[in-house]
Length: 194
Image: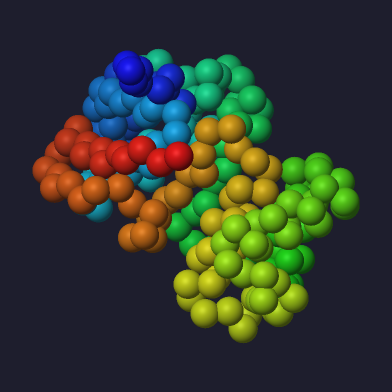
């Protein structure tokens, strides 16, 4: 049996970004196969967050070629946004809502409709081990429960690629890697999952 590599979900070639005179990304190349967990590891100021912002259409690159789920973030940002989910460094959980209400709200933002939003919320509460907490106000959740809810919120729209995480929790990371100090020294740690 021959195992062929999965088609890439992300391809970036020569990715460049500067803020004024400060070069942040200097010709980064990466290819992330579909169905992998991929981490960008590096010291503070290495450009990790900038790369995620570019790949998720929040800012434009100064140079390079990029495809995310087969779409160019610069020319077709709506298609990229439809294909990904984003979970930021800081939680987007609304403490005044229950876990289920937070997920239903995300479903509404994705235009799933009330019925599909509730169904998707139930699926995600189950998948993330939050069924018993789903009717409780999120302010009562432990830190780990809040992070799981936040990750589930990034998956409400059923991204075709994968959820983006800025500063993912340790349990979502691939194998450890040691990184250099240069912004061009990216240390991807990827592992397959099924």
